[in-house]
Length: 211
Ligand SMILES: Nc1ncnc2c1ncn2[C@@H]1O[C@H](COP(=O)(O)OP(=O)(O)O)[C@@H](O)[C@H]1O
Ligand SMILES: Cc1cn([C@H]2C[C@H](O)[C@@H](COP(=O)(O)O)O2)c(=O)[nH]c1=O
Ligand SMILES: [Zn+2]
Image (cartoon, rainbow, N blue to C red; front, side, top):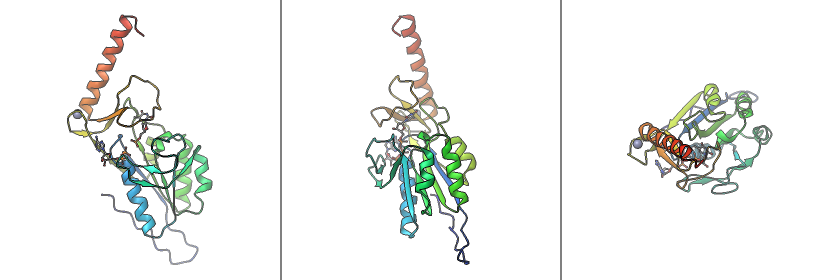
């Protein structure tokens, strides 16, 4: 379990405690949102000023709340652009961001600026997309973060440790919102098996003139 670093206890009135960036990443169903909520609720319990953001496009469970697959939730502000967070987070000591993979690359500078101002910035998101490729700004965020936590799901095919989000449909679009109806957590072996089956099926359909 992640143990929060000491926020510091500045003795001089104007002295700021050091800020930092934490990344919680992994596949779908790996517990990213639960871990984010856990850290943010502990910060609130410690009387710290907490602000939470999510990309406006993620409306799966709720327009505003961040909701885990277990239905654990926390209030958040949906924002369209990464830059919006800079303005909205000015008064906070702790800034949480969920589904960070959906933000533009500007989110990296935003996270760095907020941390430079002395804030604790906690972001959670998918490190890989449905093809097993790095997802948006997450790799760059991992580079600039002080702390990176990779969490894992359970493979729905064989029960092994799952590192991949396997898309059940044939869609090739990067962004396809969904839950268990659309994705399965899979281990490396079962993910590769599924991807190879898809490739074979596409080739067969191309030969038979279906596509
Ligand atoms: N294949 C799976 N592996 C692990 N947990 C799963 C799986 N499918 C459903 N869950 C549930 O999802 C919860 C994690 O949800 P959540 O924090 O929203 O994950 P994430 O944000 O990483 O998608 C787990 O505690 C568990 O109850
Ligand atoms: C792999 C992958 C996922 N998505 C979408 C599907 C869900 O709506 C979110 C991930 O949510 P979670 O909290 O991590 O379960 O992302 C996508 O759009 N594209 C992908 O490649
Ligand atoms: Zn497996």
